[in-house]
Length: 145
Image 1 (spheres, rainbow, N blue to C red):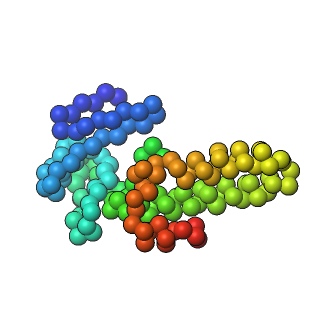
Image 2 (cartoon, rainbow, N blue to C red):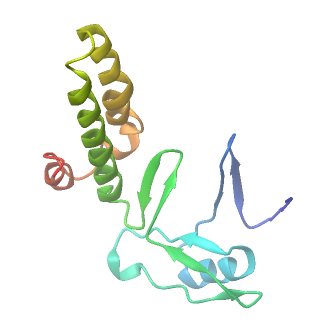
C-alpha cells in the first residue's frame, strides 16, 4: 500500500515502518491523528499530559497504545524505559535458563558464545537510548525479578 502525507515523517526499515509527528499542542496532534492514523503512541514527559485520544477515522477507532516495540526497543508513553528494562530482564531470564540447562553438555567456549549471543546482546542493544533511565528505574529492575 502506498501512502504519502505532508504532515507526517516516514521512517522505513527493512521489515518495519514508523510514522512520526510532533507538536506542542495536543489539539493539533489530535487533529493530525484524526486525519492520518489508525493507531498511535502518544509520548508525554508528564503523566498529566497523556490524554486518551478517542477519535475515529472512517468510523474506525484510533487505538492509543501505552507501549510499542520499535526495532527491538520497547518504548512506553512516558519514556521511562520500565517496559524495555522489564522486557530485557525477561529475555535474560529465559536465556540464563537455556545456558543453565546446556552447561552440563557443552564446552566453556560454547557457553561463552551462548552468553554473548543470548545475554550480552540484550544488554547492549539500544543502551545508548535506554541506558539513561533514572537510576531508580534501573535499580528497580536490577534483580530482574
